[in-house]
Length: 178
Image (cartoon, rainbow, N blue to C red; front, top):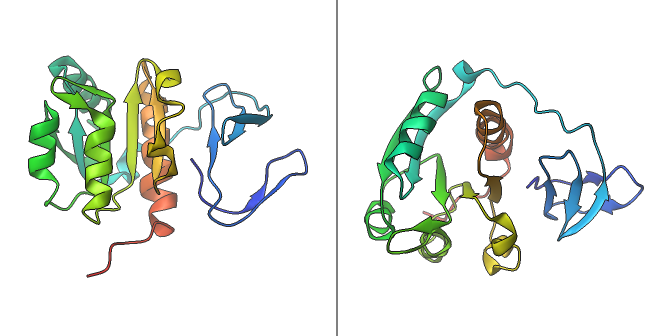
């Protein structure tokens, strides 16, 4: 999601803070309505520019290995948890971004995200799902700083999403009051 004002490309103006999504096909989507189509190309992000601390909640250890491999040239340190409960126990820590699988062995990844937000944690979050359509009506999309990365994803797609959050959006995401 992009959280800034501007034009959708078809003349429809967006107000500051209105949530839009860019689909992997290059289409632009506002609250579920496809507005404009693009080329579908993934922008190249230099991994060496990416730095920070990331919580990765995933049920499959292989997913963690793949993401670690994709991030090998970055300066992102990754804390991996394999369950909802383990993720909940780490929410008190400072992270620059959270990557959360929608399905965890003991619950939904969206529960980890909503709990984080209810505790005042506004860390930008990327939800990962093999079935993004199943999450389309989830109220989690009303929360600030949330985006979707459909599985399977490539290294370029992951780096692009991380780059958009860590290099661009992080300047516009509000922080929790001290």
